[in-house]
Image (tube, rainbow over all chains, first blue to last red; front, side, top):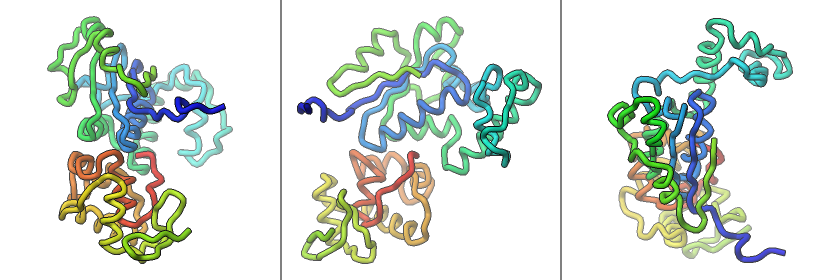
Length: 175
Length: 103
């Protein structure tokens, strides 16, 4: 039986980004941007290796992770081959494979009008989305606020992140 | 289905988007804008609306990124002009279909 609570819309989405590969960060960026386009508030909280996507020195050079990725057959259609074509995981460790997969994916994403990481973060920031870095992970990786791209709204503790995530209709996603 | 907007009978889908962009006029745009909570349309709104109609006529796929790069409006301005759904609401007001992309 449906109650009025079932119809409670998503008002705000807080997404934790913990992975620092290209394929690790994009889902969060797409979900945050998509939320803003629907009028939903969005906050991104970058922690652990996710900080790779905020550090000025690394964010323009993020790579697709190919080592241990058992689903690389998904990329085969980008090469005009069937999706069922096997791609043994050990091949992902060969020199150049990650760089090749990255350039392939970047090209496909550009075709779909998905911006590169820096431009995507700027787009989300311009749309009113918030970008935060995790203080503990910053300390661990010896990063300072000035090492991060200029759209970062702040460096937060876990407690501050939960404060940022208050309010009915707020959801937290871990990626 | 048919709907009477600003004194004109137009064809709309179940979400209220015009299904025939040629039936659109500025009075219809103003009425949809009021309904969507966008308020009175000014020159900046109309610039976006006209651009959207041009792009739709060309068959271009619209994304929030392409809007920001169009030179017609910045991303920030677009969000300010059409709060609560920049591309969805501006498309509805422009009498074109709801954008289908995720970007």
